[in-house]
Length: 275
Ligand SMILES: [Fe+2]
Image 1 (cartoon, rainbow, N blue to C red):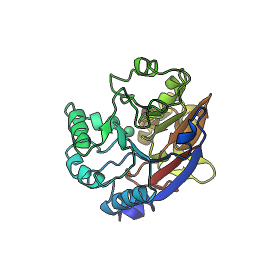
Image 2 (image 1 turned 60 degrees about the vertical axis):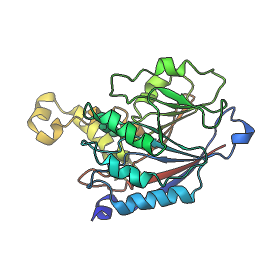
Image 3 (image 1 turned 120 degrees about the horizontal axis):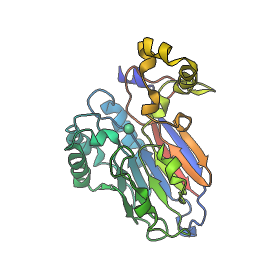
Image 4 (image 1 turned 30 degrees about the vertical axis):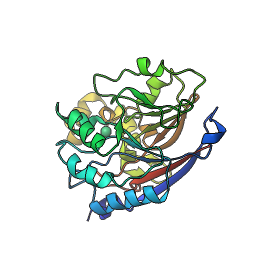
């Protein structure tokens, strides 16, 4: 049933050019997973097992997780970490939190402790150096938390140092364009979930259409009262690779599926090779 709504799991493979990447790190393989929404409804055990198997078969140097492990109640994280503990990467697994991981006051500490208990390093406005000084991994607080403050973190790094930034919400790419971001990895959008092949997420057109309607008309039609710009402003970055000035952004479509399902927007495991 779940697979019927979500579609099959896809593996996206891409090479990303990183300026000033040390020769010794050329060919570094990163697997990116996002938006699991593990709550017994939005992600099946089978799809999770397949995603973990594909990740490990890729023999990644690094695994990154970009948030929304649960949906509202944080307690499913205790079951989820029993699955995620099988993830294997040469230099480790690094994670940031999403808006759903801070849904309740107590959520953040529960999710962080559970992930940490299986050796996953959770970055909240922190920099990690799993590859040494030459390629830092920056993990930011969720954009919707009160602690999203990239400046003190980004300014610790020299402009000459390439870096990878983990930030759940792709809207942050606009703010982060003030700094060098060789590769930002995000999720949050589920790819828009409903996509018109060749055109992109339906929500993009919905936005353009509703903006043209007078406010009075919008207020009278219940489904038009939903403000999709509250989810994300930059729906044009809902999935895939984007250049924002000199910076590069990749948005993962996520593994979890919200009702009523996905349409031409399959769940995703991303395998990125740095060149
Ligand atoms: Fe999210």
